[in-house]
Image (cartoon, rainbow, N blue to C red; front, side, top):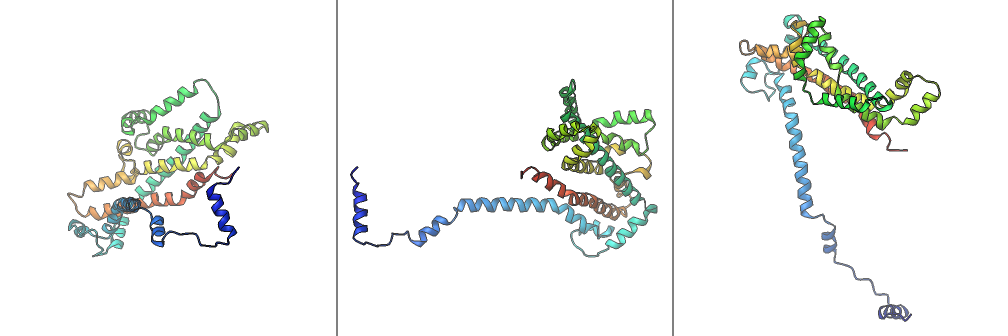
Length: 315
């Protein structure tokens, strides 16, 4: 095949010893080509600005609560809650601890019992149910699971009256059990547990344990529960937050103030602020302390979430 004119020209230049440098684009044009377009920069700035505003909007109530807890009743009513003038956090904490023989910290302990114990038991029940739905085959399994999902659509306030009637017939009204037992059923937690079980527990591991002669309870306790621990922590945190902030169920079930959780006790104090403004510092300082367990729970258990997110990424 005859060489083209371009090939002949290149060959002639090489034979003649032509070493002329290759033409390059001007440096300004190269920098302009490497610079990202202005629209992309504006888009990035808009996204970052939106995220900063959303963060400030989210943190503003906490900042207000932190500064307002350092004020007395006069400072709060004067509308100067966002400054640290007249700092009296120690006095507010002292009055909070001594008021009515320290009833606030009795409410605090009740909330820890309701939220901590109730969330742990609820997460365990949900994980066990989700594991059973994923692992076992039995007649009507999918229909029963559909009924469980229907429970997600029912608001908890609609169940308060039926639960009260059941508790009244059982003699559990105005007891700790009236608040603890209803929170054990968590339909959304069962759904999450089944999803985690399907994604984290390989069927080969269960079958191998059965062939080794392990009982179903031993398989669940030694294999299933350990593998779905990120799901257990997720359900626990969901329930802990929901029970800690729960208000309507204790309002219906409890009348003894020594059994109140924090949400109901602070509501009772806040109802008295119009007649007695001295309750304002107690309510605000008590609300600040009420946030601490939620922050501690999320910070302490976040490593389980990270482990769950990265599980299965490396084989």
